[in-house]
Length: 249
Image 1 (cartoon, rainbow, N blue to C red):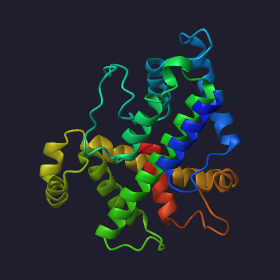
Image 2 (image 1 turned 120 degrees about the vertical axis):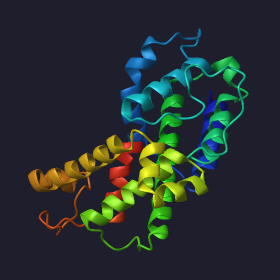
Image 3 (image 1 turned 90 degrees about the horizontal axis):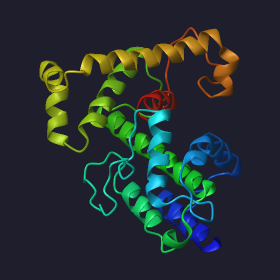
Image 4 (image 1 turned 45 degrees about the horizontal axis):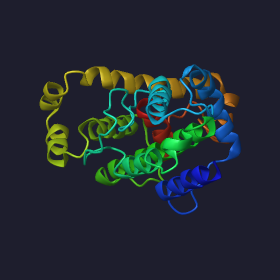
């Protein structure tokens, strides 16, 4: 068991980079969310779950938390499938991490316990956060916006719409540029685009509502900052990240 935990820790470190750590409190909170589902899954004689069940557990967690599906955890993924697409929004770090854990030399003899699943989820959540930051920074750079300057609500809308096109189109740089330059082409290519725009606007309104109607709660969860004027609609890079996280993460 210690050897498996060591492999998980090493894989997590490789995925998150030097210094990547997840607190025991955060892992405990994830375990609490996973526990009801974990209890229903078939177990080995040692009370652990096999690779297929771990895939299912992680897939269920993220599908309940957001609209995001982590490549490699599809319930119908063939057991021996090993190919990964090149345009995954989470780059190649997720597939490498997933495979390093699922192909652990201890998996056949031991399986995975609840803490193993929590470590997997926590690492993937951090990778998602990092990926969102990278895409959002790309949008700011493309629009010549410094990340340390606040945005108006109109500016934020432009940033978020561009972010969503990048998110939905993946690595198709040429296609992304064409869509951003031609609104009609964008709506024809992505028939659900207006629904996406409406949803994004709804998330921004939800942030504004919390700031104005529940300022203490907004301060507690960092939706607002000390000294922030709730009647002045200004948004930081962190605010933009919070909104995209509520949509894509």
